[in-house]
Image (cartoon, rainbow, N blue to C red):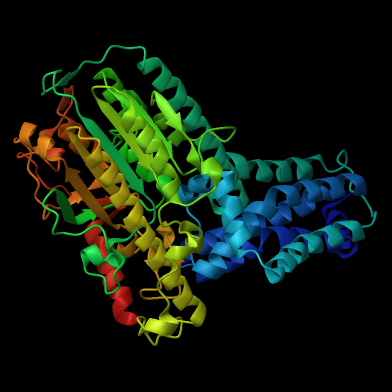
Length: 553
């Protein structure tokens, strides 16, 4: 058969297999065609995404001309299965956030606990969204069912054409720009890279734990101490009256307490919980990703120093869905998971009391709260439903995006901040009552933007703003602790990023070890401020971008 005959057969295939063409277009093109509305990728990236997606569509269409209808339907069904989830995620993100999902955020999806996802879906799911999802999946299913048998091009007679189309299809697996430009291929490649990284880190950490590593203490063993780290969630300091917010969201924590240092200029190193925890609990650095597993983490250091270590989390962890976070926290000698009770953060207090009551000389207790995580209404009991804009008129913005629902969301967020004030102050009160030489450090993993300047509530690296990285940072010390550690400096005006938290907290405990750097400890007299990064942005860049957005609203 000559070239013209082949072209004629191909055109005939187009006509007979229009449902196949429509199905492939439906599964492959909506995401790239929507990329121009994303504010976080360039125009050339949009063009490449469209180009490679169209090339993949045409290649698949030609490839399927060589097979019978059963094989064609099977291939389309497999493609539907592999594209429906990433397509729904990317399209939702593009429509609601006007941003294209980047690799770090995709990884955060893989590390999100299923229980957290269920809660989010339960709160935001409604009949319209449910109907839309059903319709979205039903359309390609209908197209697959409507496909009918038609002429099949012989592979034997057209070996060159078949080889060429196979070569083009392999391009999307082997050629990085092509794979990166097709949304669902990039999605699954990111997943494979994440799983590979997790496997290697787990193996390296297990090996390192068997190696000797010296950790010494500045204080003599006769002086016992209790140290507590409280990690909050999604709390921006801009919604705390402790930092000047107009609503009285802090009624128990206050600056008049001489034992409480309230730091005014602390930022988070990332916008999602697990990337932050990976930095906070280890020596991981932007230029040294290997430090995550090649150097000791928080619990390991304190275990080697002879501390009894405890982890209490109201955020689900462990089980079948192990993440890199679990590699760190499971090093604690005692682990408690009150998240199983599905209650607000006050549920951690009995577990803390139990740990404090144990007669151990030195204790490290790490508490991870659900804090102010969306959906905010789940974060506090009914008696903390205090703030209502309908009655107090606190929200005066007349912006178009400030709808009644947006105002209600702000009310709920502020209620969650008020309850968080109770939880954190209760933790300090319990530690204080234990009469031990003790200290409590509280900070949030990252901040949150809640309709401050646009139609958006939440945190997302693709929509980065200073509200998402400016966090509270508090240090409380018992009187006896202060008497023993006169070498420490508590200067609330110091500029700091929790990326260097481990240096600071081990300094607070008086631990010394290989590679300890006093200049990176917030509490050391030798402290030197460093450039602060929020992901790949500098904090200054983030502030400038936020100022520009606020100026243009």
